[in-house]
Amino acid sequence: MSITCRFYKKTEFGNSIDIIEKLNSKFSDNKSIIYDRRDPKENGGQSLKLKIHYVREKENKYGKLIVLAIDLPMKIMDYEKSGEEKFIIKHSQIIPIQLFNGEHDNFIALLCPKPFTEGSINAINALLSYRNKNPFDGCSINLNGESFQEEMTRFWVGELQDHHSKSASVGGTHLKGKDDYKRYVQDLSGVVKAITIKAKNGNFEYGISRDGNFWIKSAHMDDQREKFIKETLDILKNQGVIN
Image (cartoon, rainbow, N blue to C red; front, side, top):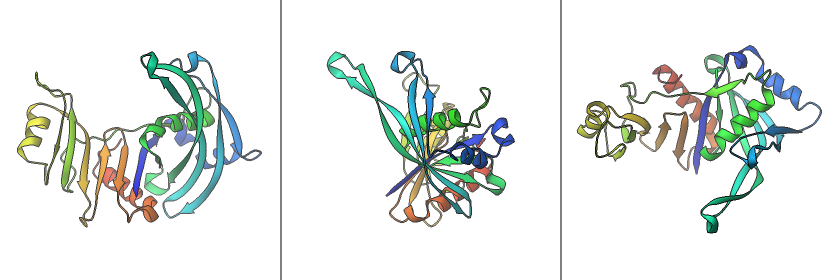
């Protein structure tokens, strides 16, 4: 099994409202809501009528997990015409959303594959926005620092100051401090885009990307995914690398 999620942070507007209360009020009369999605790159710039359906929610020790089914547009391409877009269909994707309490209440996590995160957060923002103010925004994770104490087993680096290559991927053991890491990150001023690190118990590895994505492949984690995601957020905040 694998767990994938992406962290987002609340905006100033998001911190000024009660997110759970606002969501509950939206779905108080009807469990399905139509929202408009307008993107100049999609559907000829015309509005798409899409649906958000409230599935369920549950309390946990980290806050509240809310599950929505969100309509997302999917482009169907005609490769006989050089990849020309043929038409757009709508598919409904289950999106669990972990809202954190306590010191982490400024963040949320969307527990879904990476291709669905951007469309899902756009839909949630469209649902909860007020006077063009959105409650959530992307967060960034500084992976170039020396904060991570866990063993790094792979890193992806880009924007290299090199005439021959602009990106690289290196795998191994205890990579931080090794020659490859010093060369790409320090000597060539590369920007670390993502890393995989080994958990302290050594039983599995997990990955973190600069734009807030997190993933793990483990047969033992699916029944405690919220716990592990919260603990990952603990690490990122305690080491001061997420903002």
